[in-house]
Image (cartoon, rainbow, N blue to C red; front, top):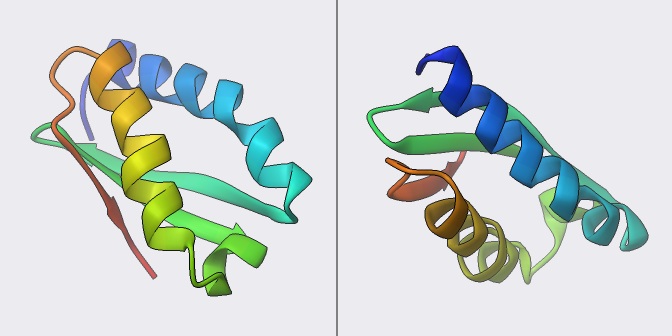
Length: 78
């Protein structure tokens, strides 16, 4: 796991995005941050939604890369 400051920053961004996921019946869980890669588990409706890849890459990944120094990618874990 990455340093606590990075993890806290990632969690802060996820908390800002969470209301949008919850509105559609989904959520996400931070699993790990390693070598600039954030590993997330999509929960609820997000786990089975056909648009989840778009949500993950165009939404969550873009926000994290822009707002948290050192983050380069987001991967979904199952």
